Image 1 (spheres, rainbow over the protein chains, first blue to last red):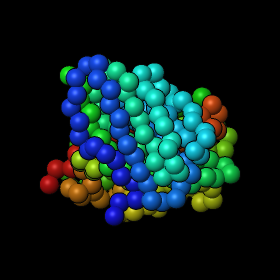
Image 2 (image 1 turned 135 degrees about the horizontal axis):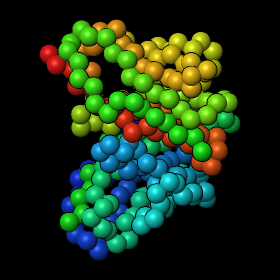
Image 3 (image 1 turned 90 degrees about the vertical axis):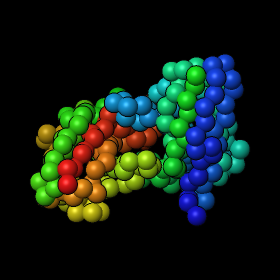
Image 4 (image 1 turned 30 degrees about the vertical axis):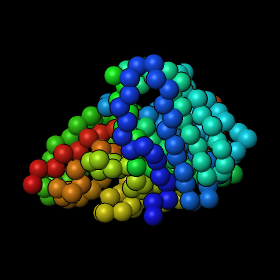
Length: 115
Length: 115
């Protein structure tokens, strides 16, 4: 079984709809991340969480919210989806480190299309 | 804040050609550096990483990268590419500044290997 899973894998929705993307991990890592990937722009950090009680905004958090329901689960919500949120979304995890996030482990991604 | 530049957006090579992909980060000090690879339709996987020690780092599938501190560079190399190396390659650096040690990604270099 995959260590980091994401659901759904593909989603098409309409402008204004609320969407939730879910991420689960079995690696036992404390740190979890949400990124979006757009062609030519690489990966940009949306939100990150260092533990269940610690949520932080990333580079592009506007229009998104997150929930860390448990150590193993980290959900990303689009409260009112808009077309420029069409992208590939990745969840990632890493171990707690006294220096840095170190190696991150990525889920398979969710392709979201907002019409 | 730290930033990462990847010089080539798209590289096209024939099989058996040598590969070098450029990566530069914006400022010095202690850095952790990574190369991730994304095969078509798949999630990101770690190719190799540098934390300290020998500046020539060997990764999976015959890839290596050299950390040159004076040039703020961490270029990826492979002596002889294969068709199966067709993928997008991302350089990343740990940002010890505002992002609390999170990864900062470059925009990626797409590699196409012709059989």
